[in-house]
Image (cartoon, rainbow, N blue to C red; front, side):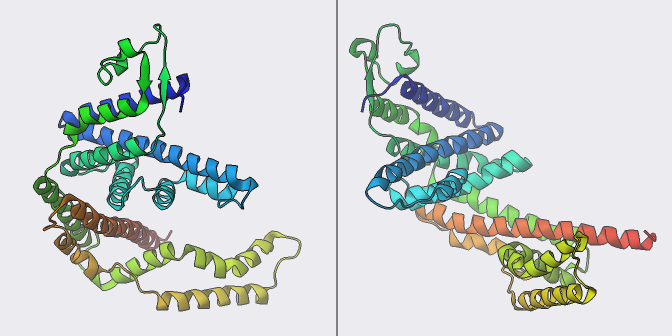
Length: 355
């Protein structure tokens, strides 16, 4: 396929992005590793976007002879979400292996914690950056079609010379060759020993589990266990059942909306709608089984058992991904419980002051 100047500009951006990330990781600084993760996550999103767009373009082209697989709203939803684009490409191509999906999803969550909450583990950052760079290499090589172009003597291609030494003579650019030589040149940066990666990821989960246990004992008071399970059940019920709660609360909400209209509900109508909603909510809540309890939190350190003896890097990543997902849920639910707890404490203080 013949390329144009826009394609060449895109290739230059890709090359310089990977060069910058290589330099950041090589520094050995965990702070620069943070930046590398943010950039690599952004680059992964770009690669996924390009590939998703290609899939959708093919689907639209075929619509004249067969029914399109994706609606306009489905396409828009997929293009907005990182995990949605990743799932699409995993389903429709052979470009992302299961282990690569795991790395990208782990790093994406980690990037969000860095970017939005300034949270990171100093020891884990460079490991995740290297794992992500390795994955990006594979994605980078697979998700772009073969392109080439010729150029004139006025084209500035100094940025390409490290990867195509004969470029001045040939006056021809093979994009596949550039990508391949770039990856070969910076691949040593992503070297990672199994022993080191395993040790650091075990430490990551162990430290996070310890922090959650400390939150229970230091921030919820001496009698936290007697009522915390109820609080944890409440926050999980609210988060895990939002669509269901919206569905069976709609009648009560619509009755409430009518209060300030020309035809407000009668007292009996309002009381019945409220009573029906509360009864159904109570029934759903009583039947709900939370995944996270105080006992679960106190046993989270055992998650390392699944990968502390992993015999290869792929097994380590896949099993760590499961542990990391569980840790993220526990951290999220406990954070919500803390907010609820703080609100209850403040309400009690206000009540004591007669507010």
